[in-house]
Length: 411
Image (cartoon, rainbow, N blue to C red; front, side, top):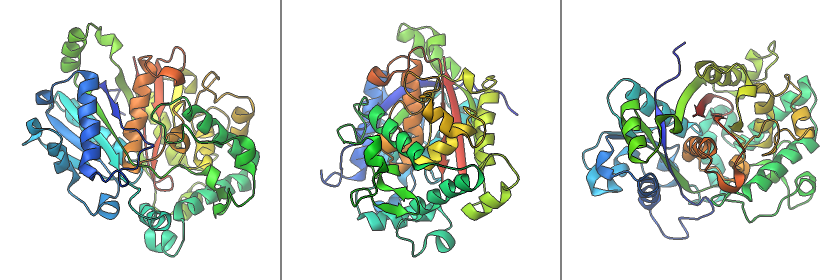
């Protein structure tokens, strides 16, 4: 296994995930432009310094009738004309795959400064149509065709599998929902920062919290979101110059200390069948997390100060708790009951609000997670800051636990 990298994260910019760009009558390119120009200004980088760009996006061909998204980066600023760019797709892990590709090019010595943009505009269609589009991240003909909301159904089955193996109480899923909504209230870019939600509402079984897929209800779901996030990755050589220019030491610039990446089989039923004799329900996700820790030289989750995980549904966060090793397999409920996941808890998860609270523009989630980890380890997360955070880890999942990517970012 290769060791951690000398790839540095210089910062970036996130659009306000509460915005509806269709209602604003703004084109997809405007969403990308705001994230890129915002990142340049925030990081005090001249556009002429960017050497290459990678775009993570899931389904603009469906939501926006637009492909060839790498080329849209050149529309953000005149200086970008002629830059090498590309687009990466791995469902909800598209942003992280773009980061991996950019990191590899820096490690190969091709470029010293790269932009990575994660982007999705999803509020262009009705919810049922959008649900069908998202279904293409599964094996569409076998798992999604004719199903109103395929992914709530699939992640409901994840909860069912936990229930079958270890037992699962709705009250623990409701508490996960409550926590993410509460954290989102502290995040000025979170989609739900002004919404109302508490544990009692998440537990209610009335018409305002209907079931949308098996045991999954509205309160268990991440949001349909328009958003873009741009981050800058740099080589050690560029980071040294950047740090000097900003009056910083190199050690103050966050580095991608470790990464993990695995791809499981497409169908959820095949994943469950493969893990039948494993103590972890999604062992490939577990392997991804451990690979990132090992490359970072971190023994276990106790060396991680904060986690930004993929809570597309409360069941996926419940899974992440034991897969990170916060509890033994099947005992995620203990971390919920003990308050370990709170911002001031033993193992803070999703201080940003996660996908449930902050929002889930599918192609942008991986880059958003990385940017929020950057904020944590540089002490710039504001009201959702975890005190003393030095190492922060992501988990970004595409499909029903199919593509999983994890980064450890630290100073």
